[in-house]
Length: 68
Image 1 (cartoon, rainbow, N blue to C red):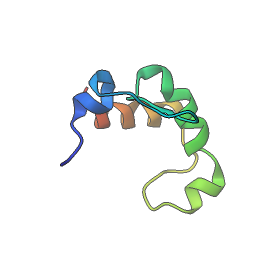
Image 2 (spheres, rainbow, N blue to C red):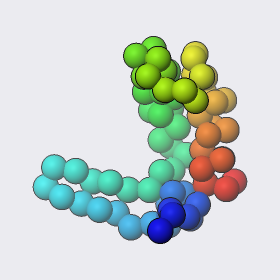
Image 3 (cartoon, rainbow, N blue to C red):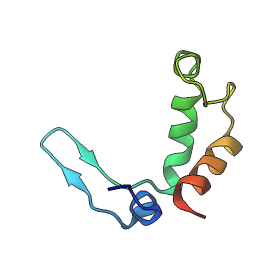
């Protein structure tokens, strides 16, 4: 079953284990996403992440993933 925009944007469940907490994305995550996506080693291994990856790219990606 596909993930809905609501689940990506913060209305989904939080999965927690002793070593990991996986939660929906929120706007405060964008700077960290930009930092990671802007790593040249990451960009070289993907076909769709632009390099350099700017903060505006992160906001556009977030809006696309969450439906606004």
